[in-house]
Length: 252
Ligand code: PGA
Image (cartoon, rainbow, N blue to C red; front, side):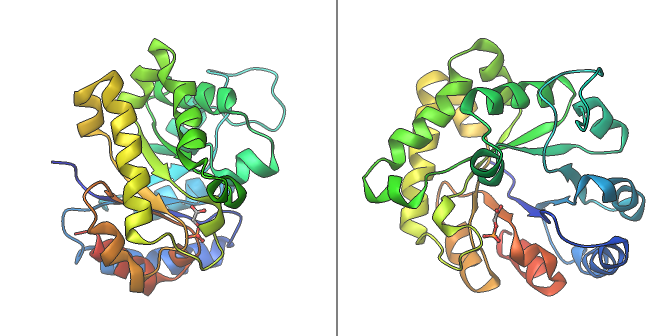
């Protein structure tokens, strides 16, 4: 049985003040959320503050990115997995479509980052998903398959996947208010699980596959009710305490 997970991706939003306010509300309400892993991914600069505010709660902390290089070194502007661990992170988002599409992160780099996260004892939340034109051309499975294969083609990648969460986020649904229908999402989730099962049946059964892309309190129950959808990666709605908690409860 996979335990559902709901992760909030704050992206580049907030301040020290709004981070405290948001967390105060979430801490208060999280006790009413049963049997769901809750993860908060604030910007790097608020990780330390968020970690101290969440001490003693069941909420986990994640970063939104990391450097593909393990350890430390001359990589100006980069943050390593070890540094994130040091700050109290247990998770890290890898290969979010905004990293892939705005910053040109390739499938190979995303695979390297996922492996680096695993080596640093972090659980990568590995994002995959197609652009609108790729869906319209009928290429969704080709694209998602290629993104997964960057990991499935090496022993280290498979080992990292064993300790990962996968997030299917159709790029056309992110921040647009357009959600994939539960059936559209389920089809891709089943495809992902099937692809993993070709390599390792146990891995495929164990890995949590989250859906992301305009998840709201009004559509979360239906989406999370699908067989292969094990929770969500939440952007916009994670910046509102009531909405985020309602989505967490929808995953129960
Ligand atoms: P959204 O973002 O919920 O605002 O669509 C999801 C994501 O980018 O992870």
